[in-house]
Image (cartoon, rainbow, N blue to C red; front, side, top):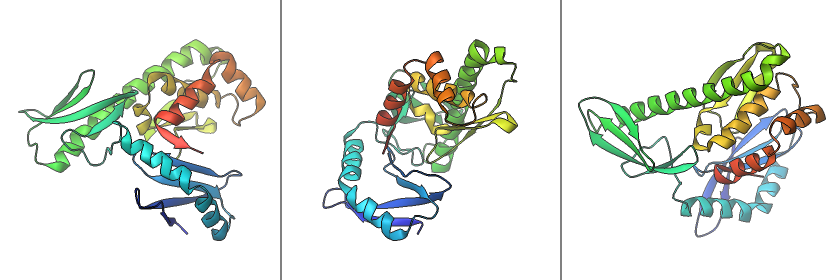
Length: 242
């Protein structure tokens, strides 16, 4: 069972739920602003239990999808159209295409302006947008990692980690302590800087405490007392998670 078709009723219709079987103990159900629904479950959970679980949470899923559809931030970064919207650093931004002799991107408070040599070339539009988005994410993530490394972690005699940026469906970030590597979700750039800082600090803390132990959370709380508020904001404004 890789996907489950779930009928939400006459308004939102049928939705496809992606099922991810993982080496985890708890169940995680998430609805993304792209309207994707992902359920992560332990590897040995039977299909019948999954069907029952999703049926019991139909209303919750339906409510989150309705909320996102009503939001001006409802967007899809894989289908860039003139006047479509996206979140960027916590703000809802409209995307506009304009003819130009050189491909480049400019932004202001409310707009992402794509200047393109051919506004009708959908592949070109996507490439220009993706290159700008990835470069923006790289710049901001590295800046925050460097800042927290210098402020908090250098004194623990650990090397500054390498940073990778990937598209990830269910994680905002991950840490591989044995490789001294942190991976951050490309889509985290949709969140405001406070939420990005929370994810960065969370993953850096795993260099000292690989597991989510009491020591891990104590360290996180000392260096970011409001981390729970930031996490809640991230969950509520960028992805709905249960």
